[in-house]
Image (cartoon, rainbow, N blue to C red; front, side, top):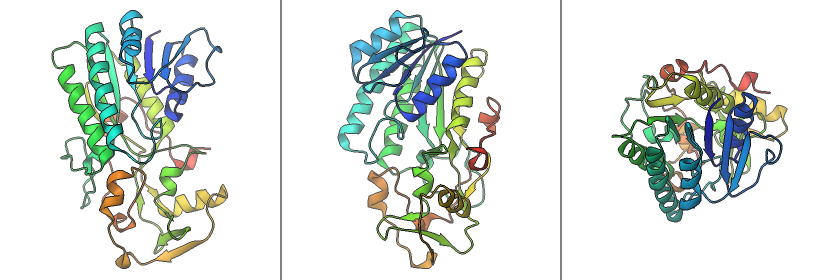
Length: 308
């Protein structure tokens, strides 16, 4: 059994992770400003209601409880921030990251898992899968925020025994939370779904259960064998047609029109500030990520087809 701290514990990802860890009899310390359903339900769960930026409170939890692993989900999308990334959110993230890494290093934490994003690579062209060695070209505020987090983390643990793990995760979904998928086939301006040709083009997403399996794998792998960056995502792309069929079956999308990709314009301004905005003119760029490294830790067996 390990002692594990989760920041952003009341977000969608945080609650899935908490449930999994408690089921495996780990001791979990959850930190979030919002409450959650696990409070008072399990003797192995301690919840601290606090902002992730509360330096004294968060640092005290890490340094006073013989923590083995910290999973840093706070300041991550689909967890506890709005779709629009503001300057204040960027400053909040920097302030939080600096002290939490320092506290973990001082406490001799075995491993530290940071939730980052595949957005750091930016749009790619060509047929080659996007690997962890691909240059970071992300231009969105969210990509900038997570790259800064990665840099702070690597610097903080450079002379520490703490093993840093960076999970660059593709846009997350589960059976009911499909906003990230929906954004790739829906025109909010015209309030209509859309598709190009037969919809057999696609994108790489990450079922939340693949991420949970990966984090569990990191916790269980012997110390020192898993340091570095991992692309955490589904093992195959999800096509636009699959998304539309799935959303129709759930009655979450109405009319769908066929569009011509030649008539589309790139909206760089919108993409920079809104992490969920997807410009359809990028639909035929390369969105295939190589998750070979992550599959050494977890099988990445989940996809839209078996997520019910």
